[in-house]
Figure (spheres, rainbow, N blue to C red):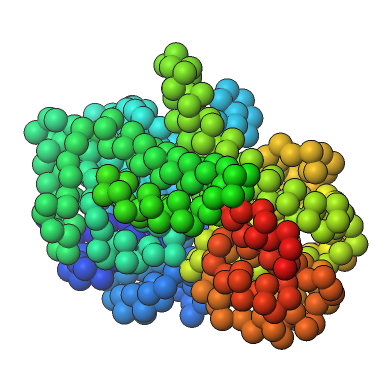
Length: 477
């Protein structure tokens, strides 16, 4: 019987996932551990380190009862029956496979900690997204450091939550995937984990596979979703060139029951910590197995995403008389999607850097992202995409080029143009007449998320651009 669970890693996956397990399994003690004292302190405070709708209420209900946040990693690993590893697996930046392969440094570190402190049999669960056959590597580390006295079962239980809807995804998942060995011990481990999820997930939504299928399924899942976004974004470029309307095309596609309606909204591009990282990992795995044609296919998904961001920047610059130098551009939204404070791989970073490279002055507003985070993201030298406008260094050299505001009307005041880069609901209800009156004329709006009523904006007097709309609809007011 499982009495104690330890989750290693208190980030976007570990915190919410462990909180929901604690909520639904009140008889199980759940500990979330991390070596970052500041992060654990935040989890134990009134200001959580991440924003997710519904998360704060669950934390308040469980924290201090059967949910604990701690930096004492060894203690809670030692006591746990099941250990979830929720650590980051970023793309390698140097060495073999740099730019594509997953960096498993944090995973290996976690495995060695488990091996060092364990004195009883453990079930170790891969929650992080990992390359296929990672479980094999982790098992070697654990087994070779246990002297045969401790038995480990490695399970793959990839997360399928989406930031912004993470709590709903965890509380009411469309599926839970459990992968393990076909041995008797492996099947017993799967059943123990299955019994935990059965507290709130219907049995028919719990899928069991072998380890390798579970690991690959997560990569495939993100690759297919990203492919869908790049597909509609590719169509948006064609719509602009031919006079078609991407919203109408999306509507037609959504009525096809074989396709469905999700992930058919054209935008400035996808972001987040997973899509690009997982596709590049998939590319590396394909290349490592000699499947170069397959690798090239998936590379194009990322290329189209980069192209969409580049195309958006070009549209802003060319529309504003071929230069934004010295012009104030209000950027509305910096997180990679609404209802989250996460800025990892957000399209806003690349768009802002592209505009800064043309010497624009940016005034940025996001309801959830801190000024510190925005400035940190824009000060990095990481190159996300290849674009002529961004040929020079995009690490802005003057703080005067970037201002961050806590009020949307202050951010847009005296601006020459507005770029909507996150689909926050509040952007739909802004008083755009008030905004227009405070802007330099002609006043431009570039809707990178297709969330605004551009017809009404044009009636006010804006020169408005939406992705995937016919050119003749936005060149003239």
